[in-house]
Amino acid sequence: MKVADVMTPRDDVVTVSLPGTRDDVLEYLQERRFSAVPVVKGEGEDEVYRGLVSREDLIEDPDEDQLALLMRDVPTTTGSTDVVEAARLMVAEGARRVPVVDGDALDGIVTITDVVRAIADGDVDGERTVGELARRDVNTTYVETPLPVAEREIAYADVPYAVVLDEEADMTGILTEVDVIDVARVVEGEDDVGASVAGQDDEWMWEGIKATGNRYFPTRNVEIPGEPVREFMTADPVTLTKRRTAKEAAQRMLETDVEQLPLVAGDDLAGIVRDVDLIAAL
Image (tube, rainbow, N blue to C red; front, top):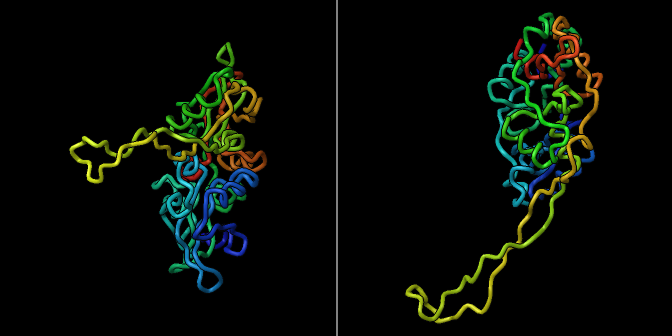
């Protein structure tokens, strides 16, 4: 199976164009719940692919408004590449989505979800059990943790989720970075930088102009509600047992529109299997 068989073709890919701003992307990331959007320049036959901007880019660089500085270079592939090779590229580069290009032109985009769908449909191998693939180190947070703290926990753990534990350390829900971006907003402000003009007696003063007041520069910050995690998490998440296959896990992920599933043994949390674990098994 080739990338062209599973990718989203160019006609169906939502893009943003240069020059552009942060606001051009927010609609797709928040309202349509996309994780990233390709960036292009020009139109029609003159269109060229330039990069990708993701929800992580917007959170990590709240002061930047220009799309050209928010976007980043990511690995690309071609439509004729084998799906398993594309999966290997995603795992090696830590990329959840890979633009498909032909020269400078954008042909489409292939994502982890596309590969997961191929596993779910039986087009590639999915017979290994999730017990073999699941991770034992699970990122967790407490149900009463303020959301901004939980967001930092997720960021520092470098995973897109936190399993939520109650007072008895039992699993009670799951919080994802999508839940955070859904309620995050960018706020404008000002920072005082103090007097920025030299005084009359300063050695480096060249115009003899005294500072007459403080200078301010505009800032932008991502504001995340301070309420506890329990108000934003998904309660009673879908789970799997270790005997389920990768194919069954892929099917469950697609049915419930999630990127990870906690693994349980009886009533106990035993691990977690992510979509990247399924494609790594290929």
